[in-house]
Amino acid sequence: MYSSRSQIHFSAHRSRANRLYNACVTERLPTVVIVGRPNVGKSTLFNRFLGAQVAIVEDQPGITRDRFERDVEWIGKKFSVVDTGGWMPGGSELDTKVSRQVEEAAGAADLVLFVVDTWVGVTHDDELIAAWLRKTDRPVLVVSNKIDSERRETDRWDFLSLGFGEPIAVSALHGRKSGDLLDAILERVEALDMEPEPELGDAIRAPGIPRVSIVGRPNVGKSTLFNRLVGEDRSITHDMPGTTRDAIDTQVDTEDGPMVFVDTAGMRRKSKVDESAEYYSFVRALRAVDESDVALLVIDAHDGITSQDQRLAERIDAAGCPVIVILNKWETLDAEGREHIDNEMTRKLYFIGDAPVLKVSALTGKGVHRLLPILQECIVHYHKRVPTRDVNKVMAEAQQKQPAGSGARVLYALQGATDPPTFTLFVNRELPAPYLRYLERCIREKFEFGSTPIKMRVRKRSE
Image 1 (cartoon, rainbow, N blue to C red):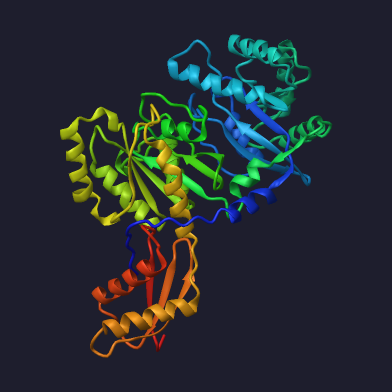
Image 2 (image 1 turned 135 degrees about the horizontal axis):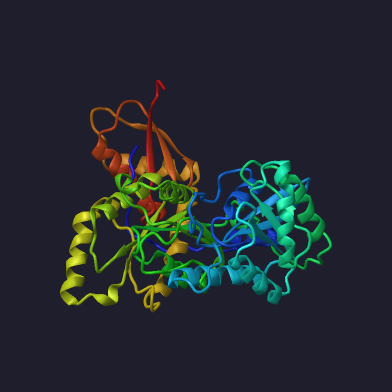
């Protein structure tokens, strides 16, 4: 198997993505937002609804920082549920940003689940959250969590003082009475008059809508770039490494149709990943790369290209999706520094060939406007399919112009897959590696695959 990249040639197929987007327009799902102070079990409840370990859970406060949205189905009916970080006003700068995200999510909710810790009881922070929720004028359902047995059922009545009616007792960890909670949620949202609009939860995961993952080392500006691309402070940014924990996806409507950007956690060497929460962040970041149509590798130009940047580039290359290198914080370099990093690109990232390189400032937005056209080129090439007749014509012309020698020949060829484009060559005997690279180059140049990786598979006639 062989993979390489070369110069991009622009080709735009917009209508397909637009048709897929229009097909996703349906009745809007009710939005249920989970809020509460840190470490009361919000993410555990979120995972319980989904029946999978989607949000990162750890027995310490502050694990969830960004909004995280998924669709839930219960007895044949759907709603959208949003996990949020712990509401901590008056804390650090990061706490304030997390709290602002919570407030924005709750302000747009059709129903708010106010999760409280039954073991701890009513706290001053719970009372502050209740006061804030009353100002939002959103319907609120109090969820009295961590009730693992009937003998603790009466403890939930303490939360009547919050002023939102009868609390519902659950154990998010063990699933106790989670069905009763889901019934109560449906009872409250079914009466809502939902206006038709794009069903973003399904649209984001619908086949055909391109996914673009933003990856890199911690604190290189991934979330700042993400927010710049989606046009809002959708992801928490802070000058502390490791701020993003989950892979956060947001759909953006571009001139070429809808596109999903996925902000991921900063990826470090496995030997440096010692916390379980950070480990699962690392795993989800790798999964986001594997599911992407294009990966944006963000590098801190001020720091230069590190060995970890090299390893991340290798990991993206192995995933088979196109990569665009983003040299962020370019404005911080002088002429000598810019020349130095240009040389480093050639020396340290040679194996990704002619992958596009953009020199930007995510903070100010300078240079970011050039990204979307290049993204569209990469996506079109990644999904391109070539007719078998044309592939064999190119093989015949290439072999006539330059035979392989030793009697080796390609008898038949076809494109067996896309994402990335994969070509299978049926031969009478093994092809030399340099000749296989020659054939790959002929395919790339003839069909204008740009820098998108191409896989070449060789099968002997006897196989």
